[in-house]
Image (cartoon, rainbow, N blue to C red; front, side, top):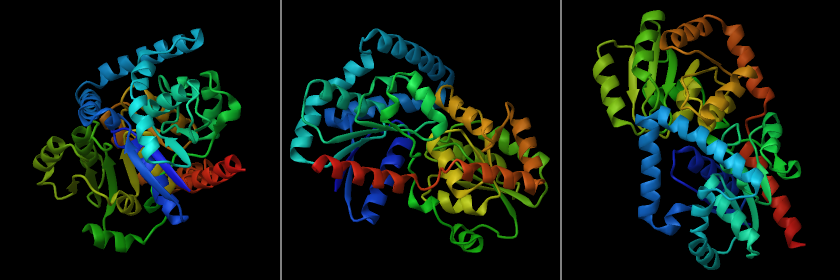
Amino acid sequence: MHILVLSCNTGGGHNSAGSAVIECLAAHGHTGQRVDFLALAGQKVSDAVSNTYIEVVKKAPAVFGVTYQVGRAVSTAEHKLGVRSPVYAACAQVIPSLERFLAQHPCDAILAPHTFPALALTEMKRRGMELPLTVAVATDYTCTPFFEEEDCDYTLVPSPLCVDEFCRRGIPREKLVPLGIPVSESFQYRIGRDACCRRLGLDPSRRWVLLMGGSMGAGHIQQLVRCLLLLTEEQVHLAVICGSNLKLQAAVSRRFQSSGRVKVVGFTDQVARYLEVCELLYTKPGGITSTEAAAMGVPMIHMKPIPGCESKNRQLFTRSGMSVSARSSLSLAARGRDLLNDPDRRRRMVEAQRRQSVAGAAGRIVGFLEEKTAERSL
């Protein structure tokens, strides 16, 4: 079985989800290929769209939030009226390039962990173009704007808790399969805390708290670090992962280097091992990062979300007991201090994460693809 994963570079989550499935495919004796959908129309197109998205999220999250709400309203209204959105029309422009690619690279199924390729596949189906099995994958715990316009063969959603919302948005219930969000195999196992500390250069005698802002290093990290240093005991040390945000990495290093309690990390492929070491995680409520932490069974505090889908992610996680949150940096730090002093509450949070069965989604997805591709070949 060979699977094509069509993703986009608007944030790291979509690519991470696709790569997790490809990793699991290889473990089961299959092959997979991840392709940047927008790059099929030209690398300049992909770079322009992705860079614009990232800059807006970093520098003007409020603008992104307004755009998200307007997009949801437009998408919902047009979908109910049977009219296609401008986003749908733009994605359809890539169809000739995608058709040529598929002719040169045949596959058994196409997985779309991003709205854009899912919309293009939908239009190809409407035109009667021959396609293999098509599967859209939601990488947030909500139906994002324009996603409701997709009509792939199946739509994979993160949790049974999400099914009703996707139905309300117009996706047929029989097409919705709650298999979870796929994350890398590295988040499915532990190697031992001492071994992790040696690998990462962390003092195993300290209590470690991890702070992450996602692949773009978003969030009010500096204020939160300052508050945590004020409210927690000397035994508590902080590991701050800044991702690709070099300005944030330099600022945190410069401001807190004298404290002796802060380790600043840039982009790293060892996130799973940092999660294994820490007693507590602070993260923005991205769908992928939150799922990775829950798969590892790490108590979680959600920071201020990027308005839009992350607000919905945080709502679902806090409502189901998988995380807690607060509005201000000081309140977030106080929540963390209280959790560090309450092992029973941390245990209950991890148990809530396990009840939601967030771990093992990649394996379930590969099994699903095996089953459905076999059915089509009969």
